[in-house]
Image: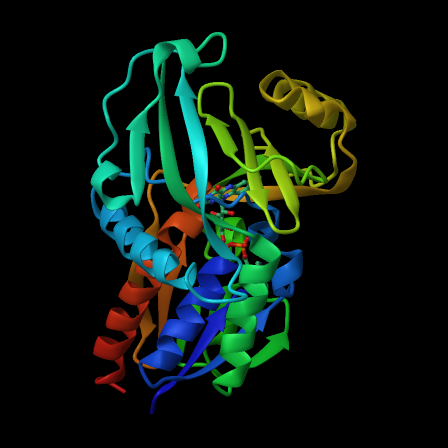
Length: 314
Ligand SMILES: Cc1cc2nc3c(=O)[nH]c(=O)nc-3n(C[C@H](O)[C@H](O)[C@H](O)COP(=O)(O)OP(=O)(O)OC[C@H]3O[C@@H](n4cnc5c(N)ncnc54)[C@H](O)[C@@H]3O)c2cc1C
């Protein structure tokens, strides 16, 4: 038997599903929301290795490699884009600097006010709607089926689906009964400002501007333990004001769309198999916090390894 069921159709679920198909599995996705209504849709989404440690660096590196090759293809939604990253203090060079196509220090006199150090980097920026659609298309082209279904608890699936992959993001708190998961609320705006070609990121003030084909995605905010999914108009104005300090034309740029998303916070990603009975095993792949895109393809590779080992016992 090479059948497997993935729960969730965000970036983790779709990446896992597509990589499982490449490895010869017959994959079905069960999901409450379709890709365009997931947290993954709201994301920046930039590949960002900063803050990753241990195993996560390995996943980030695999994903970086994959995104670099997708950026050379049409219509994947991934592009290598120049970005300035600034800091209010001196910092060490990041661990991934030699993996990027371009890395340079910004001279002190060229830094924006309030910054002490900065890097100019070429980095993958993912246009989330297009990339999720690309993954979705890959999945269906390879014969995959997506079924809309809301699941209350994962073990309700035990009689029908012997091997499942849990990619339910922040909702793993409830359906996998994991108290260590918490939401990290985020809001982004897509603005129409095609003249802005270079990205910007300040981790310190959590302000960013990511140029994409469909507009410039600007943000941001990271508020732990907030489950609300409504747009905060006060924050919209605050994001515009912060980005206007970086580029004054942002103030007059039309807002095309706004997104709210709940990052699946957890102190580390849960990527492991949990055998609940002889006939029911769950591979968990959730808890990617603010780096779900950055880790996505690498984590999906480990899902395949776990599934391949488990399938021998079926
Ligand atoms: C504002 C913002 C900016 C971000 N920026 C970046 C960035 O620049 N770089 C980066 O790497 N990451 C970024 N992230 C983080 C990244 O978006 C997340 O880590 C990632 O999207 C998580 O993906 P996921 O597939 O695990 O979960 P989700 O996208 O939340 O998908 C979960 C899926 O599970 C399904 N599901 C949930 N509960 C159930 C249920 N009970 N029954 C059935 N199905 C269910 C949902 O319907 C959905 O399909 C950002 C996030 C936000 C919010």
